[in-house]
Length: 250
Length: 250
Image (cartoon, rainbow over all chains, first blue to last red; front, side, top):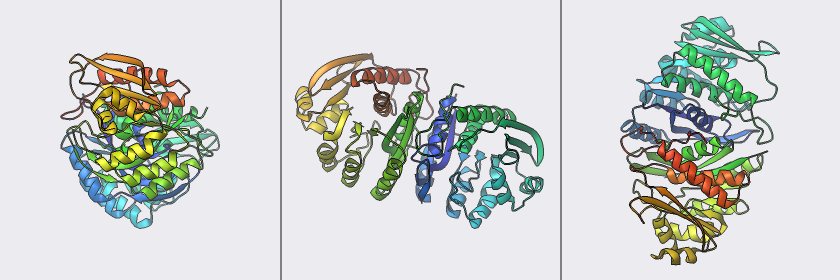
C-alpha cells in the first residue's frame, strides 16, 4: 500500500506548527509525508517575527518532480502568503483530495492573510477542498458574515469542521457540517495554557486518515481525539506556547 | 526536561532524506526537533534535479530568534551548499554540541560539494564537531587520502563513526574511532535495494540520544540498531529508492 500525504505549508523553525507538526503527525500513523514549503518563517514559541515566501516556480518544479515519481492523492494545505501562491497551488492540486486549513491569523496574533488573499482563497481553493478546518474567527472572515449559521451556509463547502473555543469557559466545541448541515458535534474540556500548532496537527491527521481510507466523519473524530491527547501531553520547550506532543501513543 | 535538537539541513520534498528524516527520527524518541533549512531541493526517489540555497541572513535570523527563546545544546548539521553557509553556521553553532553528517555526495549520485566547499568544511566545521558520520568515500575525500587508517589519523576528529559498505558483499561495517583510535566496530547484514536517507536517520538519532544524555558509544550503537530496523521495514513509495520506516517500534 502506498500511503502518502503531500503537505504544502510554512516551515516553523521551533517546530510547534507548520510542516514539522504535519510531518510528526502524519508519520505517527505510518503514512509517508511529502512536503513542499510555501514560506520560511522566523518564529519561536513567543512570536512570529517575519516570513519569506518561497518562489512559485520552485513550488511547481517540486510538485511536478514528485508527481512524476509518486502517486499521491491527498493534499493538505496550510499557510499561503500571496495571491500568486494561492493561484499556482490551486492549479497544481485541482484533481487531488484537498484538506484546507485556512490559516487567516496565527495563534501568536500575527495577521498572515489580508483581504485580497482571503478573496483569492475563497475563489480558487475553497471550491476544490473536500474538508476545511477553520476556527470561528476564520469562518467569519472567510464568509464575511458575523452569524455562524449564516457563515456556514454562505461558504457552502463540502465539509467544514469548525472549532469554537470561545462559546464556553469550560469546553471547546467542534462542529462538523456537510453542505451546510450539522452532522455531529464533539465536545472537549478546555485546557489551560496556549498551544502552538494544534490546528496543523488536527488537519494533518484528518488528511492522513482520509488517505488511509476512513470516512470524513471518522477521520475528524479520531483526529480530534489524537490532537486532544497531544495537547494533554504537551511539552514546554520555550518561554510561551506549549508544543503538542505528537509522539503520544495512539 | 527540555530535550531539543536543532537540525540544519536540506529539505527533501519526497521525505526520504534531509529534514523530514531528521524530524521523524528525533520525534520517535520523544525529543523535539527544531529545524532550519539550508537548501530547498527538487528531489524524488529517483533523482535530485536541483537545489536552491537559503539566504544566510535568514538562517542567522531564525537561529537567533530560536536561541532567544529555547535552550538548545545539540545541533545536527547535514547538507550545506556554499562556503558562506559553512562559515555562517560555524560561527552560530561554535558553543554547541555538534554532530556533523558530512554530505559530500548524495545517494542519487549528484555531487553536492566541490573541493573549495570540502576545504571550508574541514577548516570551519570539522574542528567544532563532537561526532562526524562519514561513509568511506566521504572520509577519503575529506582527508584527501586513499588509505583508510591514514585518513582517520589525518582528520583527527573527536569521534568518527565510519560506514563501510564496500568492504564485503555480505555485511556493512561501522567503525567508531575516538581521536584516531578504533573503539568498536558494528557489523550488519547487507540489505538488498537502495535506501534514501539512511545516513540522515543515523546522524539525527545519534544527536537525539546524545541530547538525552547517553554516551557517544551507546548513542552510536542504538542509532545503528534503530536505523537498521528502519531499513528492514523500509517502504516503497516511488519508482526507485526505498524510504526508511522511521515509525518502527523502538
